[in-house]
Amino acid sequence: MHVDRSEPFSKVDDSGVSRVDGAALVRNLRAWANELGFSQIGVADVDLASAEPGLTSWLSRGFHGSMHYMASHGLKRARPAELVPGTVRVITARMDYLPQALPDHHEGGWQQIEWQRLEQPMDAAVSLYARGRDYHKVLRARLQKLADRLAESVGPFGHRVFTDSAPVLEVELASRSGLGWRGKHTLLLSREAGSMFFLGEIYVDLALPVSEPERTHCGTCTACIDVCPTQAIVGERLLDARRCISYLTIEHDGPIPPELRPLLGNRIYGCDDCQLVCPWNKFARRATLPDFDTREVWHAPTLLQLWAWDEATFLRHTEGSPIRRIGIERWRRNLAVALGNALRAIDDPAIAATVVAALQQALDGASPLLAEHVHWALAQRPGAPAAASAAS
Image (cartoon, rainbow, N blue to C red; front, side, top):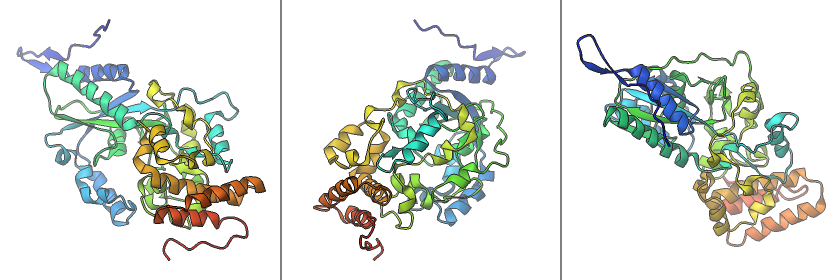
């Protein structure tokens, strides 16, 4: 049986007029959000003018790569009231995603287990956030439930929910609303939860009281900048997405630049290095929802196991997963690069021969994009002739 422990959201002033108690309403929001699996709620103003120069500079330098939608949206990303007319506040939400079953009793904790996976060239490294259900689906549905609960209390109001799905400056809004601060790797950091969480927003036309922002706590630490395999973090809080492994393996749909391929190692979907090394992630919290539990197929996958998938198998194993969005061609492109990197690293001739045979077999009927990456991978064998570059 549900017991409503909400505070009264209205109060009568000295003139006898009933007015909304914004502070009580925000407290209620936080309680409702907690029931829905969110870990933290904040409220931000919509004046993001001070963020516009940085956004303009980032776009003008081409750091968004082939994510052309970011340029086409322009400054709308920094102007919530243009994206959703009437918006006066943004409710921000944090939801932790570190899988419950991820071992933490291991020496060095869960981070050390992930580092060890990266050192095994035939293992497949998939970003932690992608091992469960697609967060877009989970957060969007629960944000809508939160908005519905709010409407039950205050009556109909203008709103729209977002989860990494529209031109929204998520980290900027989250930092302004007190959920954390922007780390030097550009991700949001929290003193109580590190960075292993998702963000979502509800744009509203209610003038709720805004939250106090959090000051930065990175100090002189540059661990995330130093560890980045491709040196994509080109300055504090400045990312060149064109070099970022997450961008290259997920967002980018063309050839991966040959000079960056060796740096991908066995990372086939995303990259967690800057988060694994961050000292604040010793406070990372486990997910409270089973949606983010690691699916069986992602517990300990090998490159050859995943390479053997046909499209039907790929679609079956990625149903409801964020991985499905990249499609089978990009998926196999990424695997081909990882297998090429493995050929350079492994010493066992039998394993190398198995890898070569699997790659060669895939050439029959391969698309031009995949074929080019397979030829590159085969050329990584010691003594193999160099492959033609994607540009030739």
